[in-house]
Image (cartoon, rainbow, N blue to C red; front, side, top):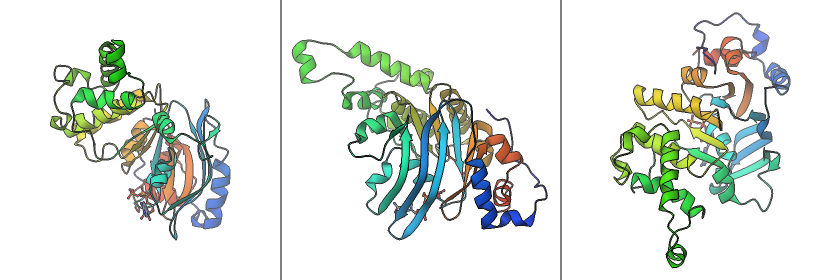
Length: 300
Ligand SMILES: Nc1ncnc2c1ncn2[C@@H]1O[C@H](COP(=O)(O)OP(=O)(O)OP(=O)(O)O)[C@@H](O)[C@H]1O
């Protein structure tokens, strides 16, 4: 992980780097951006329109497995739109038209016949505001696996006499432990999740996402509604999760992106991905003047 903090002062740069033409050159250069390990997701020429609004313009980038990729940029530049394309959540938005390609492990997710329930199981999502179900902590965790049929309960289980409670208990323990919240809730698993603090609720939502055994976890500003202590726990957790999962996180907080991510993609107004590189490079020595201005706080 990068220890880098955003630079306080910008270095002098040629004015020509502010032109669109030069941004194009920069994009061509980093389109060869190479990282260690395999690409988990490969995005090619992704365009999204909401009606006449062109929200994402020809975005191409590969996302490496088992690492943290941060998406940063000013409000409205298309970060959440991009994130939602990675598990086809934009399909739910009537006005959205999506063109281009997204491959997960080399398989096109935008081809006909893709099972969206399976896809969203493999590519899970955690939202900005914690959104636990108004059910017990235990039921929040077992809900997904039951829905996907991974825990066989109900009529069939009763008829066959099969008792899956042990499996369920193991699963609940594992997911809560992985989300670093087990110690805080182990003696109140049957309490309503709505009684947890905001930070605990968000870690429960992460545990709920982990319970269905995803490969990729998409996070849309997962700590923006939390206080600094709860935020720090989520950041630690994200770094820990990246040992086993591919994490893609949208954040407005540049220090956070610098602290927790391995690579950073900078989107700027108009839905363009302007630069994508190792996080250290983006924060210490970006190619684009516009990116430097953004990460040093000159605009945005
Ligand atoms: N459901 C929607 N219907 C219509 N337009 C939308 C929808 N969602 C986003 N947009 C538009 O698409 C553009 C990109 O929005 P998006 O939410 O992806 O940006 P963002 O970078 O994530 O913004 P923020 O940082 O404020 O969350 C904006 O112009 C926004 O108004």
